[in-house]
Amino acid sequence: MKKFILLNLLILTTSFCFAAEYKTVLLISIDALHPDAVSKVNSPNIMSLADKGAYSPLATSTNPPKTLIAHTAILTGLKPSENGKTDNVWQTGEPTVSKPTLLSTAKNKGYQTFLIYSKQKLGYLKNSATDTEIFAKDEAVEKTAEVLDTSKKQFIFLHISGLDTEGPISGWMSAEYIDEFRFIDEQLGILFKKALNSPSSLIIITSDHAGHDRTHGSDHPEDFKRPLAVYSSLKKIKQIPESALQIDGLKKFIEEEF
Ligand SMILES: [Zn+2]
Image (cartoon, rainbow, N blue to C red):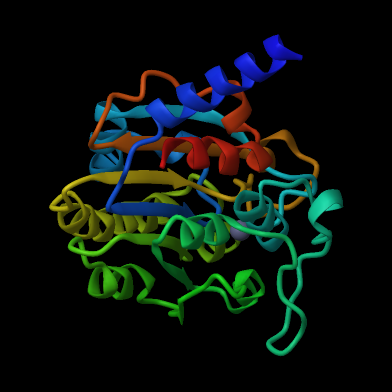
């Protein structure tokens, strides 16, 4: 028993020592981003952060790999069967997420919390720990730059749409798809510049799923792929652990960081 208590104390002390106090935490999901598109040429701003932090193209989605199911797993840290969101639909006025989310964790840690998204159904992810909810179809990144205040302790979840419409129209990895991604990265460059003025920042960039040809959400292996980049201004993140590459494991990884 004594040994057990000592071990617990040791674990508590260790995790306390490693947890850093960030002023700014940004969790960004670029909808439908295939890891093959992420490169220094296509996304210099994301790769610049990834170079100073850690990056993996080997993160995976939920089954099925669909927008709301995947984002619910990201924010709750639970598999669809555990968090209850097994379908991909939600309408305004319907019940929202019932399990605690990363915004709940952030709120408990004294952060102002923001849920900023560009697809109406992500309104499902709003809960009592959400201080500010912004639905911005085409201007989610600009709105985020507007509300970002690096003098305050803020946790911002930002969902960016664009590739999820370009993929089905022009095809995943098509010239048009890549153009759209380059545009998103350019916009993010402006946001990152502001975020990096923060005394301390943790920035996570990922996606919900990829796609292939002109389709996604199927059982095709390409559809399950996701990239994951993590940057911390306080320390060098050497490696992204295997568990964080699983979509429902990302929450725990982020919670251990801030
Ligand atoms: Zn999606």
